[in-house]
Structure formats: structure tokens, C-alpha cells
Image 1 (cartoon, rainbow, N blue to C red):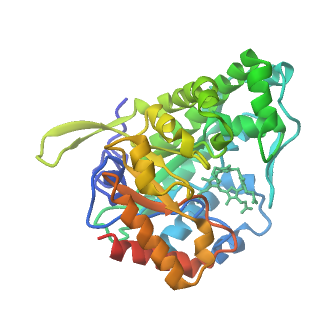
Image 2 (image 1 turned 30 degrees about the horizontal axis):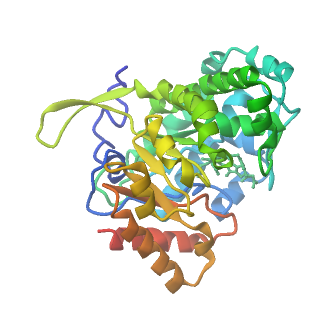
Image 3 (image 1 turned 90 degrees about the horizontal axis):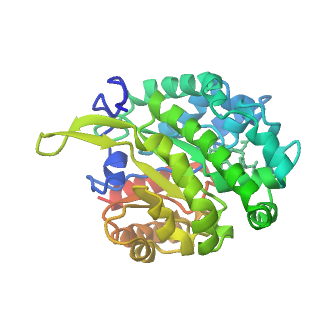
Length: 379
Ligand code: CP3
């Protein structure tokens, strides 16, 4: 499927951005940088806007979701916006009883930890999501309209990254009915009833894949699959019980292509770049690349040069400053940023990011300074 001519990739607006070039393994004038959770509670303008609006209501209000997405792009001059939404939004849109509790995370009306619970979920046709996704499409369209006129120094429009939760991370919340430390309910279902587990994973893959596809069709220039909690799994369980569903989710965007010209001016058709990230997934990096993604996101536990050896030659990496460093004195933080950049040289291309999300208590002026440092030092 060829993206519409108005899509920022087709229209030649973002295909040569630092971000998109890095995701296809090319280096630019400097290293691109964005932060997971760059939109959110670290920004006073976010806290002001959110007063009186619940998290999921904010996600489904196109004007608000778009404004929140743009706030960190304007403030920090990062190389990408990440769409303001949440991994549970597609569940909400098909009628699953879920809320996001501040300080806690997604909480469901019940847990779905057995065959009967899974059957209740899978009775909902994932295709219903498409009709319910109008607020998502509208929010993305509003966002890219401003991003198209926002050149944060790279000489191109600023790309928007779309995202979705991977089936396992969603299942970890669904099985438990809320957040958990070890995701025991999900990991137990996987082994206690492999048939129900597979049904849950396939349903979730279909739903989250459609959510991601909607964002790309509406104008996102890259897609990131968050398998935040995959680090709870052994490599063997990951490969057997999880990776096939993640690949199925990504199949919803792998067929989306755009036409452009390469460096020599020849016509080429390119796919939309895809990033795969998880926390504590040092043992899984090769397998996470193996499901068919361009770039692997690395958390702060594995230095990028070691990660590069694990995923193999030719794979761009994204990461991986420990978010804790954002609270350290500037000389300490500065040295850590430079170390991440130096180790990132081991990959063909590097997108600077944190090893997980921005902590809510982060001083946003520190983030702006990190962006400046990466852009100066990464040149
Ligand atoms: O800037 C960005 O990164 C974009 C926005 C984004 C949010 N959630 C907004 C959000 C993204 C990419 C997500 C994905 C998400 N949601 C993940 C995967 C990424 C990761 O962090 O590992 C996960 C696991 C969730 C589930 C979830 N939603 C959690 C754990 C929380 C935090 C709860 C809390 O209050 O500590 C949420 C809520 C959430 N999602 C907030 C934001 C800005 C905070 C809610 C608020 O500000 O009121």
C-alpha cells in the first residue's frame, strides 16, 4: 500500500530528516535526539493543560492530544514528536473497561487471566477499532500540520513517531487487571493455558497493529512498538509465546510504503521505519530485532557498543541514557551523554534517547540542555 501523496514521507518533508535517515542506517550532520515520555508531567505547560481532564479523555481530544505532542518539540527542539496517546487507547476505543490512574497506570474493571476472560475480550471484533479511531486520525493530522512547518535545525520538517504497545505488554496489564511488578498473571496464563494465551496475543496483536497503522496512514513518519515489560521473559518464552504476535502486530505497518528518490536520484520505494523497544531486554535484543524491525531501542542497562554486538552489524540503535542521570550535576550528566554518544558510534546510526521514559520530576531545562549537547557533540 502506497501512502497518500500528502503524507510527510511521500511529500518529501520528513524522509531526509535526521531521524528517518538514522532509522534507515544513515548518519546526518549530527545525532538526532528525542525522549520517551518527552510529553507529560515534566512540563509545566502540560500540567496546566491537563487540569480537570482525565488521561484517556486527553488522549481522545484531538486538539489537546495534538497540543501536548507539540509542547516538547517547541520547547526542546527535539528531532521528533511522539504522538501523545497511550498503549491502552485502542482497548478503550473498542469498549474495554480501562482507566489510567495517576501515579499507578492502566487499571481495568477486571483481570483477564483465564480462558473465560480471554473469550470475553476476543468476542470483540478488532476491526471495530477502525471506525472508532477518528479522534486518533484527527489528532495526528493536526499535529503534522504544525510539524511540517517546524524545522528544528535539520533543514527538514520534524517527523512524528507513532507508537503502540506490543501484545505482551498489553497482555501483562490485561491478565493482571492493572500494573504489576513481575507480570505473573500473564506469564502463568502463557503456560497454564497456551491456547487461551495464543488467542489473547493474536487478538491484542490485531488491535494494537491497527492502532499503529491508523497513526502512520494519518501522517506519522515512523512507528515504535513498546514491549516495555518483555524483560520479564526468558529468551525461550519470548521466542515461542510472544515474538510471533509482535510480528503480527507489525505486519499492519510493514506493507505501508512511499515513493521517493535515493541519493543518486533514482526512484525507490521505501517502507515506513519501525523501532522496537523494551526495558530489561538485554538478553532479548537479537530476538527483538529478529521480528523484523529497522532499529532496536536499548534500555540503560546495556551499553550501546555491547548492544551493537548483540543485534549484529548494520542495525541502527536508539538509546540509552539512564533517566536517573537527569537529576545529577551537569558535569556528571554531560560526561554520561558523551559516553552514550561515543558508544553509539558502534552502530551504523544512532538516535539518542533515554533508556526509559522521562521521570515526571525532571527539570525540563535540563532536557533542553541535553538536546543542545547532543546536537553539538554528535556532529
Ligand atoms: O512522550 C511520550 O512518550 C508519548 C506518550 C506516551 C504515554 N504513554 C503518555 C502517558 C507513551 C509512548 C506511552 C506508552 C505507554 N503507556 C507505555 C510504554 C512506554 C513505557 O513507558 O514503557 C506503557 C507501559 C504505558 C502504560 C502507562 N500509562 C503507565 C505505566 C503510565 C504511568 C502512570 C503514572 O502516572 O505514573 C501511564 C500514564 C501515562 N501515559 C502518562 C503519560 C504522559 C501519565 C499520566 C498523566 O500525566 O496524567
